[in-house]
Length: 134
Image (cartoon, rainbow, N blue to C red; front, top):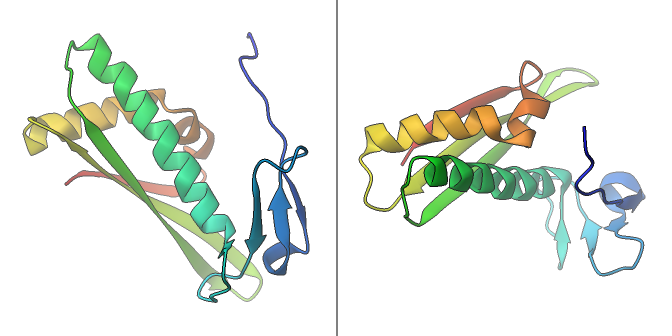
């Protein structure tokens, strides 16, 4: 296995703190889901941003293999669930659209991308992930 890239992020203060890269090029205040604080985000939003970006890149790879040149849009909807007191989990819905493709073809390509995407591989068997064409 050849490492292509690694990165580091640091959080202080948990859901009421901040997150930043070592060089401070990426820095956000963190707020709990449902709370608003100017310039703040939350771990679920950060996870959704990473998952949707990674998944759309995997979709690009799949479309390239199938010689499909089209613009794609992928959204990740990350939900936080309370299972029981002090027992939480997340779930993800991936919504994808590919210009010029039928919903059936789009769903086929999304399912293939789900097999390629590193986020999909990391979460497989750990959280519920629903894939749908929109």
